[in-house]
Image (cartoon, rainbow, N blue to C red; front, side):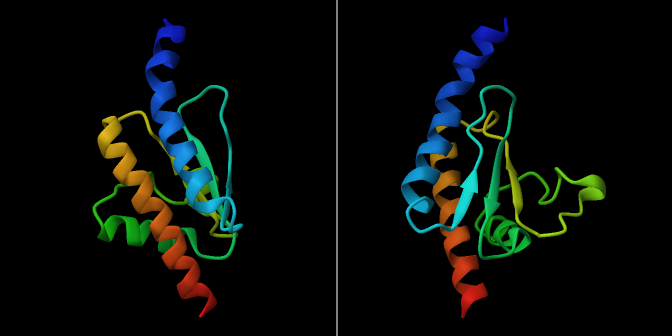
Length: 114
């Protein structure tokens, strides 16, 4: 059962991971996990506020898991972590959401550095 589930989820995880790789890797804007199991990708932004990235995504219609959700009481002391759950959206929606997430990281980084 779990192997079938993994087979269904793998393309969705690949969409997110490939988009992060293409859009964020070369400019050192973030780092992320490449999970071998589980339902989440952990994204750490390097130069901006994860909360601000979440706000921008929300303004653009992308719903993320609560920023800081991986920390006790939801408080990320460094305000860096975003938990990505790619299992629910369709692949088309997910590609758009991944693109918007990367744009939000770029915009929040520009805001933080200016």
